[in-house]
Length: 128
Image 1 (cartoon, rainbow, N blue to C red):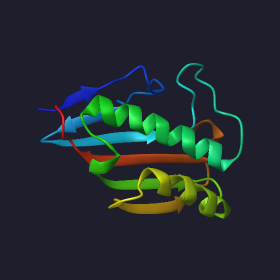
Image 2 (image 1 turned 180 degrees about the vertical axis):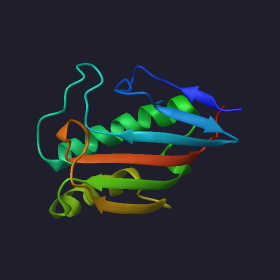
Image 3 (image 1 turned 90 degrees about the vertical axis):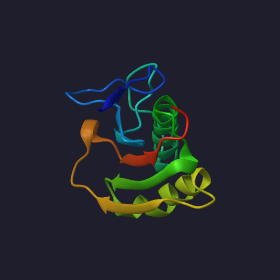
Image 4 (image 1 turned 135 degrees about the horizontal axis):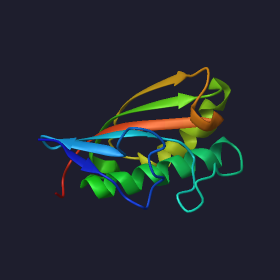
């Protein structure tokens, strides 16, 4: 049976989807864009600031799911511009410094709300 996860510490879903779904000990997290959960607006700044906000949003959903960055198995990073890869990768590496998950990175023609970056994740549940 699937469990729907929702937390006010991350932006509310802006469509017919859940922030995350947990099933059989695995948390499937929807993509997060650099929305400030308090304002619902895209954060200002460069790709580093955007990536930081995305990862903070993912952290909130991971915690609400009973998971953590240490239990993430796979991520997918969607970039508006692959030229932003080095800066995104630097920030991303701070969150996954040890035993990083598998990852795919692709350039997307357009992301929701014209965001510069979106990241989704699959994680093992460790505290539920």
